[in-house]
Length: 301
Length: 244
Ligand SMILES: Nc1ncnc2c1ncn2[C@@H]1O[C@H](COP(=O)(O)OP(=O)(O)OP(=O)(O)O)[C@@H](O)[C@H]1O
Ligand SMILES: [Mg+2]
Image (tube, rainbow over all chains, first blue to last red; front, side):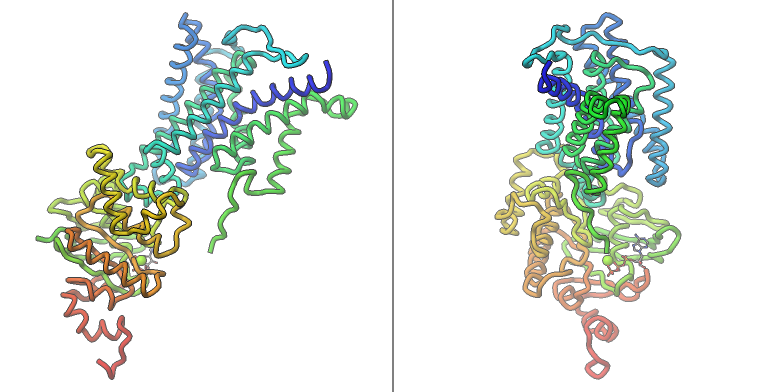
């Protein structure tokens, strides 16, 4: 296989995993905009999405039904997290609320272990395993599913914010809470909605990714951290930035995993690919603290 | 009948008393001015009325009902909203979307057509808003932003509108324009509570008024009475002892 073919292969691998980081980052941005809180349970929604889909197909449901039901269940879990970790603490500081979401992540992880055990589970590919060929590079069709579904989801979210009244109301809430209330927007409802929407996005990512990478109860934290990094690199609070950041991290990780070991003659092991992606992300933040698409923070008077 | 009534309202910021028992009323169809120095508690009073800040004791009554414990989004549905200090526009959204969201509280009950008509109505009142409909609100000039803030509040079809320093930061010409609009509004049936630093301009269009000092009402009367009052003239109209 030529170098170009290898690069194509790693790019597909990177973009597809990155797309899921992007969905997590987008969800984090939506919640951050509505509440100022970083939801550290976000990655658990990815894990739950995958786990539920496996469980429901295991009960004999057709894939599409299992997928939709999984999204619904995870959305409900997202709403529950908002009720118990955010709304139940109306006078708490942001930092307390963030810690509450970390608590929620432990509960969800523990619950998943109880329900599904410690083993990784897998979902059948949506459309078989016969690889698609671009040149000599063979591409797992499921990765095409991941990219396609993520793209449609991101576009859907953008259309929702731009064209629907509720989407605009959520933006209004993010821009100024008092003003939003003065036009009659119920802030609590918008916050719930942000958790529901973010949980659904993460679940979608988990469902389409599970046939590729399998899913385990303990995998949520990786998604949270990489998704958080994606959101910060993209410019915290900027949804598209988070998606771009996620894809960038995914691609870096894949390329590092593929080439570093050869390029450094074995000096740096490919197992360090995540660390390399992280280092590049930090470098970007060092050069551009507001993130790739973030606006420079306004000077406070 | 008075549309709005405050009965010995107190309010605090984390224990620090900002309103020390305010009693006032605003009549239907009138402009009621609320005057006072910086930090007197004018904005605090408005925020308490529309539910942004909880009362510690006392009662806020609107149209004969106790609204002291209602959330702001519920208060708006009763027909009472505020143009807040600093305008607080939705900067990243277009002028049109700001107006549309202004009608958020009516969306469930009323047809989209009705609301579109009202947007046209507000644009007639402030033609500049029609011209800039697709611009981001944050890019408007101060005067234009003030008009949009008032327009957005009007979109909730309020019976009573609270205005917090609508003339702040405006050139004299824009001030007189905004005040003329407020007067026109009132004639069309929207009652107004007007907080102002520009005391002479406010009392020219107001029917009645109150003067606030450190969280208490120290003076009340008709606009004429207040304009003729020596303390008001000295403290707010910049007249010397000799002139008075
Ligand atoms: N968010 C807040 N937290 C703590 N104290 C506040 C807050 N807002 C206002 N205060 C205090 O409450 C008092 C009344 O403030 P308020 O903003 O109501 O005054 P104001 O009459 O509107 O003044 P201005 O003319 O400057 O707008 C002041 O002493 C102010 O410092
Ligand atoms: Mg004020």
